[in-house]
Image (tube, rainbow, N blue to C red; front, side, top):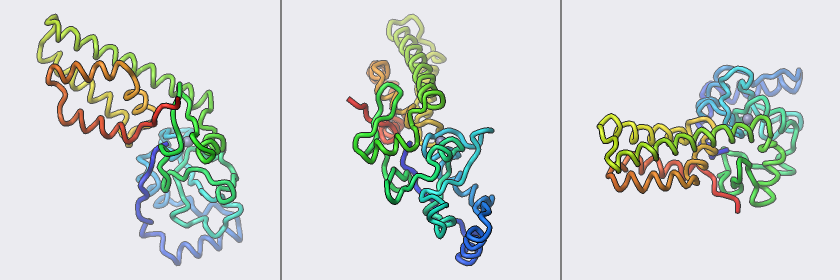
Length: 250
Ligand SMILES: [Zn+2]
């Protein structure tokens, strides 16, 4: 989970339309929020990801649900309040279900910086206070099949890539392979890997955390600095990853 900057309320959602549809919902229970301009605006502000688990919600089976942070059954006046709507995958929306976020608040990533309440340890998200712990529990952020396994797969792929980049760099330093092609492979490969941890990528908090806390990354960075391969773009990427990733829980 990462902090999201909410985009302005869609212009199509006028006060008049909002009042009309809210009344319709109260009368019929119809899903009046399932309108393309609402869904598209929600996808825009989350880069097509679930606001909680960061899965791609454009993929089949994970498709977008309009999530009501204050649940629609109890807080009927808010069913079309823009600030109450979030883009969520089916799983997270279903898991959160009718949890009452007024009585027992959890992280609303469009308002609260998740990093302040969540840390990371061995592919698991840990709450660092009661607010964070309740968030993990209500959203089941350590769902074994869906999320912990996914984080492990991501972590494993990152470690393999970092090991390979370190091998390439060692070959360059020892003079075994010093072609421009190899140099570009090292620099561009490092950049491509780091870009996977930018906020617009799926599972960015996991990816950024794993890259920055892997000892192989520190080693690689030192070698790239030594070779004068570490450029402004890499520094920029590192700063962005630091903003996206979680601290380790220990
Ligand atoms: Zn989700």
